[in-house]
Image (tube, rainbow, N blue to C red; front, side):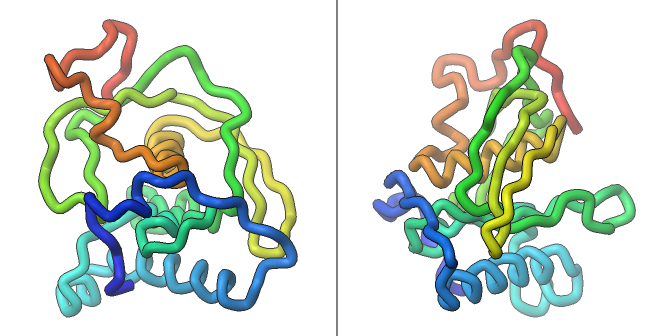
Length: 181
């Protein structure tokens, strides 16, 4: 995954196209490479050797492929996979009224600079996606996993995390927003 594109590339601002089934061999291989990148980026030895920034999600548009597909690998406190899936054509079916934000803000493999501020997201979502074989999945997600999935779905819609930050007051949130982390 040496070809992660950076902020400014027009693919990052385009709405990605839906994946069709049966999925092509090329698209399945891309999905595998995206997940392998996340696994390697979270392995301290491999990450140091190849100078990889740790990531918990990687969307196809970030590797200059405009398809609605993303790899998500969120580890638990013991670094075992808490949520590990390739999300194909993901859709948020419902979302909580209560908002959440990461206390340290968000980052992105396609954005090389730190952009301070809270990124308000829905604390809970119900997510529908398809796996590589076209099987439908629906799952309720909350807290950090929900935030990560919303960040990745934004990539499929041409939105970057800093688009959500309040421009006048980056650390202003609604009083009911919970801070995670």
